[in-house]
Image 1 (tube, rainbow, N blue to C red):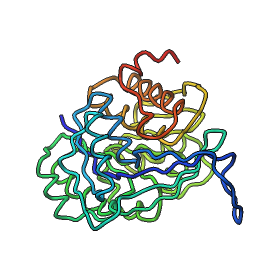
Image 2 (cartoon, rainbow, N blue to C red; image 1 turned 180 degrees about the horizontal axis):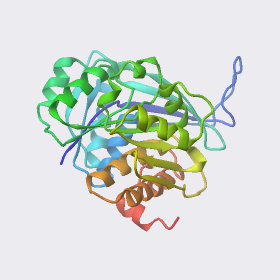
Image 3 (cartoon, one colour; image 1 turned 135 degrees about the vertical axis):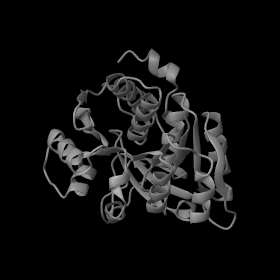
Amino acid sequence: MKVLNFGSLNIDYVYKVNHVVKRGETISSRELCTYPGGKGLNQSVALGKAGAEVYHAGCIGQEGLFLKEFLNEAGVGTDYIHVLPEVKSGHAIIQNDDNGDNCILLYGGANQTITQKQVDETLSAFDAGDYLILQNEINEVAYIVEKAHEKGMKIVLNPSPMDEKVLELPLDKIDYFILNEIEAGQILGMENQGGQELSEALAEKFPGARIVLTLGGDGSVYFDGVRRHAQEIYKVETVDTTAAGDTFTGYFIAGMIQELPVEKAMDMAAKAAAVTVSRAGAGVAIPTMEEVEKFAG
């Protein structure tokens, strides 16, 4: 069973600061680091390091060639990544403060140049039952969902960063929603609701879909309309939270592909996310399966 991640590829410029800059304020950063990033890339790296047969599709500029190399090193296939010499790669400007929290500014760049021709050519290499992973950092997401659904692929959506485009997607064709409370509330038009209420409302609105709701420090909840499982976080010293959710997503889906019980897949994903937040950077912080298995919690 193969996984196709049609997703973003970013160059992350991470500025270490005492606090996130306020409106009208000018501050100095102590350090600037450049990392491979993008929600798509991060999730592919997590899937690859978790042992899944994963392929990444997307677009980069010439200066982003190192992103392909990074994916290859993580065991990710890159044959479906297009290099566009006339376009800049997507990038992110990230402020990382002393508490490990982040503030992120995205530039879409090559991530917004996906064509329907590229989608059709890429999907032709995949079959019914294969998994498709999507986020909201590339264009043509609705077209990708429609075509993948026609093929009978299992579609996983992480609707981040959340905006009005997500509400225009054919969400009834999604098999897995992996999202946080804010994103769930915006999709449902609900405010100030807890994890149980949101997961139940999502399951009612999208019957047949599996819901994984991340709740920050309160862990995460799985609900498929019948089974419910609550997963606690593993507490570690936080260095950088940038790729925590992407690591969780990749490892959870890898667990589903391996046909692990939901409880084991959620626990594995939580451990992987804990290791990630204890390190600096995004894609570079994602642990291998061996590191996850050794993690004591």
